[in-house]
Image (tube, rainbow, N blue to C red):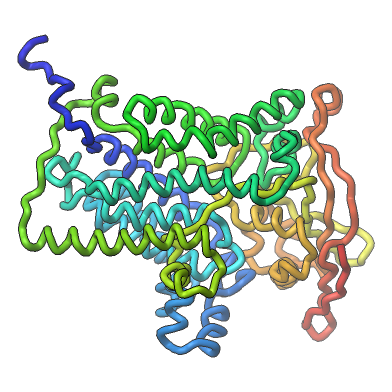
Length: 503
């Protein structure tokens, strides 16, 4: 080896400069995807003429809580102004900040801006923000503020390597997403995980299937049973490699990366799997990446100034509270115990969460469809952008884009309509011809002239088999089950009348 060639031995045993650089670029892209999807939806969801207007929601909170309590309950910049223009500014600023993070411009500042702006949206989205993925991103963003290097253009940040505590907390989030999800699968009592049938209908019944998932659904039971075994083995066993020497971590990295790629290609879970995939990069250190051709950069110990020592103490205390709260969130979630107080205080900020994905498997696929009519006999469906609807339309790939309206309808279909009153509000907005709500659909079937009545109908869907698809071109077969919430009708005086129906 010539003297000009770098030696792998020069890298620190624990150096994480390249994994940090890669993770923060990925985090910027994930924030960008989150803001990008909100740009096309937020007015329809919580805008002035949206389904759940943010200004009305915040007004209701202001009549219930005091000045400080209400801002703690809903930590959002929209307290200053909740107009459509304010929503546009917040999302636009988030897009810019996330791109700056991608290009490694002032990473600590841009992470903080992304975190505050995304939290501002999530805190006001009400029913449209009840997803674990939102908490995962907010937790990762909060921890990454301490993990990121200082400076405006820090490059790899060799003069400011990540602290062990901040690195551990991001790894801890990655570990908890897997391990807690594995635990709840067994603790939930769902027999499907115990008899290895949990994946038999998984690709058919998930929120937003992909066409590749349709093909995987055709595979025999032994394959699906094998994926159950792999899933439980990874979530409950393999992830403990995080605490083992490098070679075990590298093996774990390749296995979980393959698992996440498999999930990404067979379903659309917005940015969730991309975030988990990116967190997995932190299993690596600089040495294996150097073997792949990444330049070797030796980190330097930061100068131990008084200001730096104070910052490290503040970081340690803050992350220590977050660490305790993550444990309390899982073990004492919902408890009124004094031991769970830190978790209750941090809950509105979603930076110390408990996770538990797919604890109970969905037994069937139901789809809610909005239909309009002018005579009560001929009903025309509002076409969705992303949900299965036309049996002959191929399921698509949308992730990391997150269609919150379509996604929420999947959850609403699993319970009685009274658990999701926003569905009736959406019917009312369609009756009013709200442009922002109509934008949530692929098209306006009434061409700007709202119908006199809007109802919701629920269907059950099943994937077709290969032979049926070859003969008919249908990806799905479906059966109408009846009305979901009921019908909203426009009265002569312009008011709306709701005729309830139960499903």
